[in-house]
Length: 342
Ligand SMILES: [Zn+2]
Image (cartoon, protein in one colour):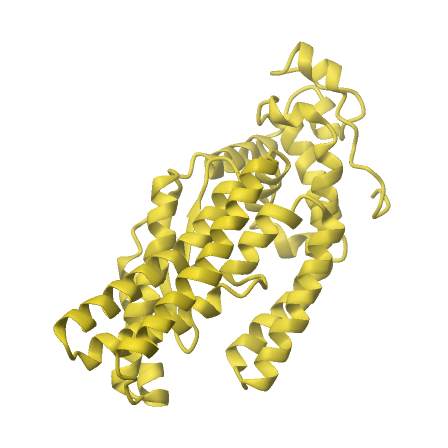
């Protein structure tokens, strides 16, 4: 095992450029330099490759329905049946924004679910990682949520009086404005992290620690216990996350990662990086998820980042949504519609 701050095994760029498919560059672990890959190596490579092909999983309509029922039951018992329905619709429209953006960018296995007492989650698997697309996917949730809230407010105004529409618009504005707060893992934090910080491990760590403090304070002051669970999980994951960022940064110094194929040699190197990432964890604890970790590193090392112009545009879109769209709808609600009782 190499020390924590040593660079990863050097991949011999010239050899991979000359014969990218089957050459075994010197300096690699025995897995790739041996005469023939074992059956276990073949199985691991096949598993990693299948992650990249985004093998279609079963649809998750059942999960969506069950989590929606649990969300309504939990929220209804806690805060009342009427407000939980508005919250469910607002969460669904917010997540739909993420889902539509992921579909637009061709992500595989796009799905969403509800998290009782907390909100929702939309996930998908991109074929290649692109920080600019990730930022747009993150922004699409609050933006779509705010636009539907604005439409509801406009419709309520046109109808003269519609307390239900106004209630929904209020819930939706609050929910989406909250998600625009620039702390990871909230959407606003993801926009900032993807565009600015995720390419520099030290900056990413600093941003993560600020987010932990900010969300921790918010969870404490507002007594949001689900948020404090998120904060605790973030704290626990910080060392591994930081180690991973540095391994990825070091590996990215070899540009051949962008062009080489996902073969036995690449998988062997990536497996070594996973071992370094989880150096304090027993291997059998992550053995089942090994193909996912290897594939995740493969994507992260090859991740594309927006140039200066695109970065400014993405941040401008985020600032416009947070500082213009959200306050404008809130102002319209306060100024032109009667505030409902909750
Ligand atoms: Zn979101």
